[in-house]
Image (cartoon, rainbow, N blue to C red; front, side, top):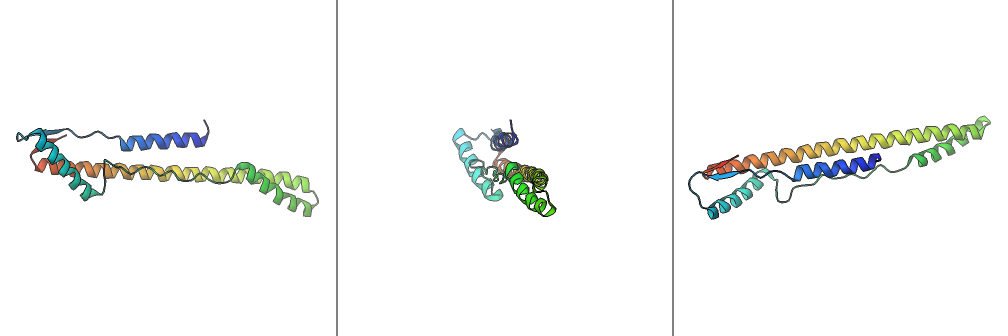
Length: 153
């Protein structure tokens, strides 16, 4: 499995973990009917959503950023061209092209790796923020229901 495949699988797993969250258990402490409980749960859903800006019925997804552009071969080709020019000035275009190709390939590979690492860090931060929003929503939802005479766990 290459790096891009691992990255895509990781993103899918994070998105699934964030969006699939257990619904809290709600128990009517004051003899509320099932119909009243559903009405109260719906009203508390709306209130908690308004307080936190998070909607568990439509949670935000984790944004997949564009993959780094350019291949290692492209970097090698550009490096070889530049190296050939420098080598021609120095008297050996072939040696200059070979050195330039190596430097170009390594440079492109390092830039791609750095971009992938930054992308993963950004997605981790986004997943943490979504998790925090969900936690804030759950707390607000529980406060609302507890205020209406329910036990929430």
